[in-house]
Image (cartoon, rainbow, N blue to C red):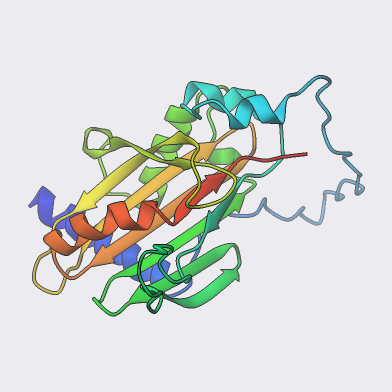
Length: 233
């Protein structure tokens, strides 16, 4: 029964991801008639003296390393999913992935001829999900928000590329992942999530394929063309 509930939750998530929904946190309540709204203020960017972006980019972005990021500076994805194979020993063929939606409300979607569907997106201002100084706890909160049926014990640590350009050599960034087995009317899927509390950025990747075997074969190839790009000056 619990497995069925988890599978249903993940199926709903995959459908939501691929239909254009994104993570959102409810906005603060509007002031009542007896209250006056606070005057607007301007918050200048936070500047940290001596911050070394190159050193941060050159080190693995573990959950603990999230505190080394520049406060409030968002992190983004880089991908070359819709580019032809880069194997110059062969005549370039068509791209494996077809772009469906590009950076709409922070979300980008792809599909391929095998029936797999992929989405990655970023969110900001996720304060209610952030445990200050603890990216792992914040990431658990993000995953439970995305997949309410997910138990912390069902989340596995995973690594994604941490490189300025997808397909280039670099370090790795820690994520938590949630897997769903294929079943009747349910695609096999994996959802990867990472909350970067200091950068105030949530990162999510979702990959769904018709079978477990196809998902297992597709995920490593996807990682070769997708990365999380460290912020730079």
